[in-house]
Length: 574
Image 1 (tube, rainbow, N blue to C red):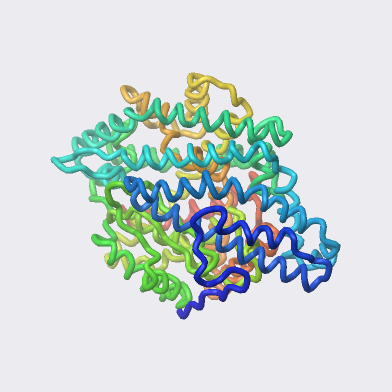
Image 2: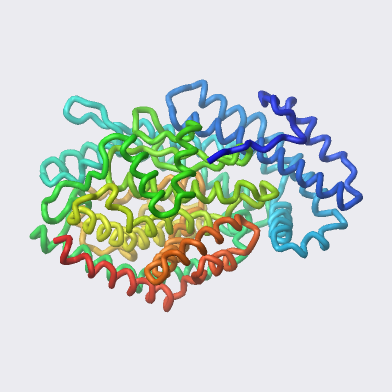
């Protein structure tokens, strides 16, 4: 795939950002410019978009490099410099530019286009939140959020005279030998225990600063502030509560059935914490690849069988050095696809160690990457800035749509069938966790002055509500009580998590459609993604051929479908 980086019209091609003074003239130009004609206003919007793309990409590279090597103080300082010295000066200027935009006499005319209508409503929403006194608070929140990756990135354990990452350690919890699993679990638990208080204190500090942010903007709590900030125009708090209830009623019982069958095969009445990931038949963990090159090449082959455009996206990223896939010491945990709005080619970061979960992560982030490519030529940067409910629809649908091609990694039919069955079961298992994390956040920010003991009690209460009661945590109560600390979204991107659940429902619907007509389902999928954020979320889902719906009846319908698909693999994966 040939990528032509957009030619700059406003900034020079060799422009370098080191300090605020370097970029300030461009903001001043936009602020002072005459936009009294439609042509002038449209040119102003394009120039602002170019500046936005540059700023976003500059920050992106600082973040990417820092997360690849959290122990490099120079990279960390570069990111911190942007957050503490450049961004705080951009924010008030950007707010003034948004005010200038919303004062234009051409808003009504341009709003006849759905894409501009969505842009203007988002800008108006952001303007309603801006407060000068919140800038230093936002800066401090960004600094604190960064600490989570630093703390957890250093959580390695020593196993068999070797220091290994948590990702590598977690893969050992699939070992058929219980003594191995138990030993590794205890090593993980003890290492994490060293940071329980540190992460509790960090989270408490974040909560208080976020609460103050909301109060300054005229909200009663950060939850209500965040709903406006995230642009949740298409669903409400009550819809989230309905999602929680529907998952509890329709999904948790199915997870309990899955776990009960697994316990029967293990000949146990309850799991110990180190048993939940092991194969009940004593088979070794699925090993789709050994080296990251196998993961990369296999993904390209698999995507090519689905749609050559998909494989071209990954191949292009590889040629441009936009992939960092292997787990290594000092690397931040997790995985992400970071859009790069100027060049149009995103960056995938992950921590692969050879597990089936790594394969899913690669496919998931590959779905995000394809989405970035499909939106790269949209007119304005704002049109490419996706609501998470749409972004995650791309990634989660790719997981399910790709399953028909998993023979690339699992040539043996037994492994292939097992991989699909486990993935479908994992989809059911994660939905209650998503509901629990989201429910936890609602409580956290509605009760911002809670004590740590109250926080512990609430988490345990929710663990009972969304859990199956089939895990025996005796002797490891602290690990259960602090298990929420493993969810980086709570620290870094609050309230960004239920989107995974909403999008998962959409992805199940797209996959269900693909089983009836694969070619049509893929075409609708690509069309929906190519819209970026130029249509409402329900309209984008409808374009993809599914409903934007998480009511009890619809979730039951999708749960029944997934359950029926799982039954097809019960015999073949025994």
